[in-house]
Amino acid sequence: MNVQVQRKNLTTDSGANLQIYEDPEAGGTIPQMFWSRVVKFADKVALREKDYGIWQEVTWREFGDIARQVGMALKSTGFQQGDVACVLSNTIPEWVYADLGVLGVGGVCAGIYPTDAAAQVQYLVNDSGAKVIFVEDEEQLDKVLEVRESCPTLKHVVIFDMEGLRDFSDPMAMSFDKFREIGAAYDREHPGDWEESINIAKPDDLAILVYTSGTTGPPKGAMISHHNLVFQAVNGSRLLDHHQDDERMAFLPLCHVAERGFAYFSMYSGVIMNFVENPETVPENAREVQPTLFFAVPRVWEKLYSGVRIALSDATPLQRWAYEKAIGVGYKIADKRLAGEPVPALLRAQFQLGYWLVLRNIRKMMGIDRCRWVGTGAAPISPDLIRWYLALGIDMLEVYGQTENTGLATSMTPEEIKPGTVGRPVPYGEVKISPEGEILLRGDHVFMGYFNQPEKTAETIRDGWLHTGDVGLIDNQGFVKITDRMKDIIITAGGKNITPSEIENELKFSPYISDAVVIGDKRKFLTCLIMIDHENVEKFAQDHDVPFTNFTSLARASEVVDLIGQEVERVNKKFARVESIKMFRLLEHQLDPEDDELTPTMKLKRKFVNEKYKDMIEGMYQSA
Image 1 (spheres, rainbow, N blue to C red):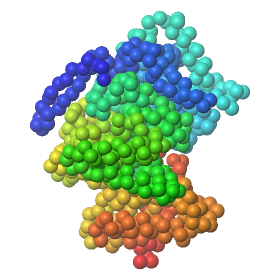
Image 2: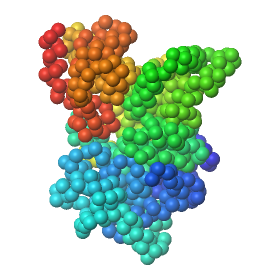
Image 3: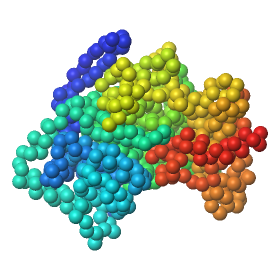
Image 4: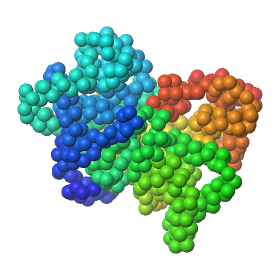
């Protein structure tokens, strides 16, 4: 990155040596950082979105104009410093326009998952005290209209997409285009107001509220300051090597700290953000864009891998032979790298041949051929999957962090990849393990606390350290390994401590398994509830003449149960006998983010699953 940064070396009271970068040009708040980039990059491309089949470009100057109009429109409504606005939308450019407009006038921006029900929208609007809510379309508008009588602080609704709402009229609501017109007029009437507004907020002021997924109770609003965000952007984008000529995909929920954080990384470093059409078109859009950086949650990487596995099942014998030869060379190189050994020139030459003949087409099909690195985080991933991507010649970097530390606490680098770990602590923050085995974090990336919940804040931040709730260790090379959530550790009836996530990750490495929950706390043996991968299992059924009519009948088919049984046995061979899964059951309906079993980031809620499927679980133990 071509930025004038200042490096500080600090030694903490615990003896940790930190390397912290500061960029005076970027300022100390998100509005200052953003506007410095608008001025610096001006007519260069800031983002793209696909419209009518064509990728449309938005320059930094245009990005700045829209955010400015949003901010000025908010001011025209009486929106003041410290007021809250919510965004209820999928990941589209309007999301970031609203975000930067809100922050640009000293406001606080809170995201709401578009999969949330009306009752959840009501809770979040009231908890945050939002005065304005931006909604994507008619579907999201309906949720707000259903509950607005119970949201006393809410004054205005702004709608991004007016399709189907041509005749809609409501004194409380208006289109995004109309809102921008009001902002532009206000800006003309108040010259210099925007330039003054972007300097209102101070680094330690609250910038955004990120609500946790609420797996154990109502969502909590994590308060993240401008300094938290700028500190991560300046230091994190340097650690993960972002460049001005890079391109990335934007598709994860922007109300989640991962996508929100990487959006600010992109703004700071000038990376072009490509907004996908919808979550289902990620593979297609990635093939079109061929990004140079690609961060996704494990489910996306598992899905892409499964796609290759399934495609190979339809390939000719010659094609499969060529793939096995090429990927075999890739595995040899991956193993050399992981062992810290030099890669012989002959092996490199063999890989280049395999790349041009076979692997290049696979990488292009996956949309990752131009990637300098790909990242994974927000949930555990199988070490075998990281090794497979390495064999393709793609550096997969696993990172770890939480909403409460603004997203990035540990990271791998291309020079130091160690599957089974989440890398080393970021050089600008501290990590230590408590006597109970809990991972603790400290640094300028740690959040301000929970909104209106001082007791929860006091429980989470003690003696300056963020208590993550994750169990882990730091090995003799300084790599951090996450074993599980403290509340998820299974202690069997025989007193054996088992970390279910390791077993679950191995199960999800199968192209036929989408997710899994291992059960066994205070039990004599382990059982498992499994969610099949609908697309891949459906293809298996079609290829093997297995009759089915819907998802339920597919999950009940004896051939499918046998198929999953083989995958379970494959995984059992990797673990000790006490860690083997003795029985399993398949969930018989397809889950989506609207279902209570899943978090908005598509992770099964362990506690909820244990309660909802209690009878199914008890049946496995009673039949043993």
